[in-house]
Image 1 (cartoon, rainbow, N blue to C red):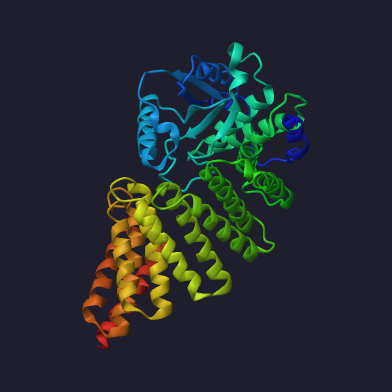
Image 2 (tube, helix red, strand yellow):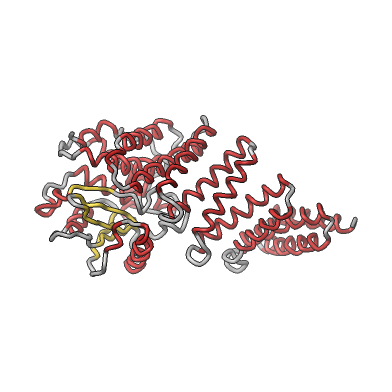
Length: 455
């Protein structure tokens, strides 16, 4: 089967319209740093150098080769060595300042590629790729220094790397989308007829789906999401060719991401999309388990919590809100204060909000206390000195919970606690000249004083 011709037929042209784009001058100033690590190969070869050379001609990339010797036995993707892989990759990323790290490992007559970025498991960012996502290439194409390396596979690799960027800077995000658009156009137009055996289909389709989803995730065009769905559906139809179950887990993971994005950006049938995303994420967790691949499990749990919350807003089904709390707790167990302080603080803030909602609906004081504890945990990272405005908003939320407890139980101590938190927030709001916030918190203070005076 001539798979590369098949790709041309399934991978449709991208939209001709585009949101904001950089000028050519601005784009030229942005280069993403990519480091290719010497491959774990049991034969004499230079696959890593070949990949580096191929990528050096790609627009927007600054590519270097890392060949310092170290034991690469952790590249087997087994759960017991996963932490070693992540830690070593993070060390190289820190040392080189790379935006993306490319790992390579030989498996019989194939070369497996994986991609790591500095924020791989530290934020719920705009990157859809997992470290476990594996792109397989035939080892034969690396012969004669890559003389038979086809252009479509270079573009596929290029797209995988751009998709692996996890960016916080808005200008860089625009450049990422601009490059993805050009890569998709090349993949769509290429007429190469290089033979690629059918057993590569699920892995190629998986990465094509990642590339296109990275490009269209915020689209309001139904056809864009249908393209991604067709790619993932093709991958699943060939799942009998997948030997390692974690690769199947990754495909379901991306199917969950697809439905998640569909629910957020398309107004039609959001409830159906929520259900489909939840089902896909749960299927993914069967293969990417809590005790085998905890970081992927934890990220999926975080996404499931947000989905159940959105579903609860649609249906007002209390069990969905409880499920949202459960999955956020699951994420909390994985992304700890010691190892992931920033993401942990985000989780604690979200947990505080969810528990506050649940305590109001169920009229449960113990859950309200758990909400306060979560918010206070968030303030271990979000301090008054570091981020005074966000810290003040957390103080206000804690004060509101204490007020509800104090009013309900006629508990003067809780009401006085509420006043203390409200005054802390007011001090920040006034100093930052935030008139609306100051008026709102002043009203809360007045209301609390009135309740105390009647007790």
